[in-house]
Length: 412
Ligand SMILES: NC(=O)c1ccc[n+]([C@@H]2O[C@H](COP(=O)([O-])OP(=O)(O)OC[C@H]3O[C@@H](n4cnc5c(N)ncnc54)[C@H](O)[C@@H]3O)[C@@H](O)[C@H]2O)c1
Picture (cartoon, rainbow, N blue to C red):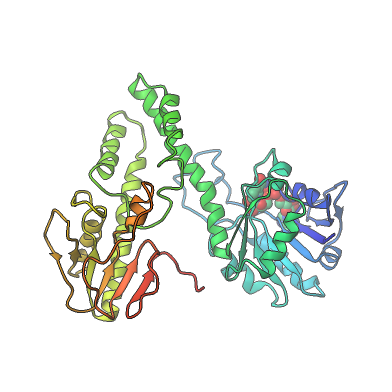
């Protein structure tokens, strides 16, 4: 039996504390009077000093008018408020006579723990970020049957303190949950993107509903059920590896045509403008990264793969050339390596000296759903000293070359 304390026993914290109290000795503290049959509500000094684990479940509120119950999309975006979390941390510092294992449950944005909380916590304590995927109305059931348990540590080490928390959870869970252990920042990102993926999904599905109402002869359920049954591309893990942007003869132009349709039927919003705009700015961000590398190392820029995907000749709708466009806009030249490309402009067949090379094509990522695929092999000899920017983060360390896994900024 472990000794556990909850600071903040509101809508989330109290039910979670009561679930823990079925197996452990649990205390709760709140700035408002709270009662419980199984959790001992006590003062902050007792809670902190009688608990080995201290869970913080205080609010991280949005500003007034930002809950979505009334129009808010026109308002200036704002961060959550972190005063209550900081107050809880200050109380741990003030009262704790020994080292504590502090676990933050409250929702915060990526980067917040490292920036705001850990520097404030006295060094003798340890800190985990452990957000819950829990919905109102089913808190207790969700707590012991989570889709996953996220545990964030300083460096993503799955053992040490994360392993101890896992052992603690194993005593109360009913569904043998999946554990996702990463850095504080990664777990902050998993939590917030989990929720916003749901918002994006609902936004798309309800857009089809709007089209059904405007165009006629469409039952939205026929359309969404067909998509829901599309487990190959829509409902599965495909397209969940960040890398090059959407490309090809169909997708970019379909988005553009749908923008026209939304305007034609006066849908009132332009989701795909945002999608297409993001695609372009993501390409520009990657182009700027290549330019920075090229400037820093005095090298030219080469994109390995000009066609919109490996093994085909088609350069139509290519994300490689979109990136090339932004490289040129930044004042740099760009060349492509691609033996199949149907557009020979700026295509070269070999490299004479080291270059910054964007590894755009990845056969495994593109075609592995068909069957086991071999890796993309270099389209020519890669000179020693070259810097390969791998947007798919799949290349190994290669002797004589520097490989930069774009999108992985972890230190370990
Ligand atoms: N409610 C949910 O379903 C849910 C699900 C997942 C995540 N979360 C997150 O969990 C956090 C808590 O949410 P909630 O719904 O329980 O909020 P809540 O407002 O119902 O509960 C928070 C409790 O903390 C107390 N509190 C406020 N400041 C305090 C302080 N300085 N010291 C001690 N106690 C203090 C409040 O009195 C309240 O009882 C939020 O970050 C929320 O985003 C909530």
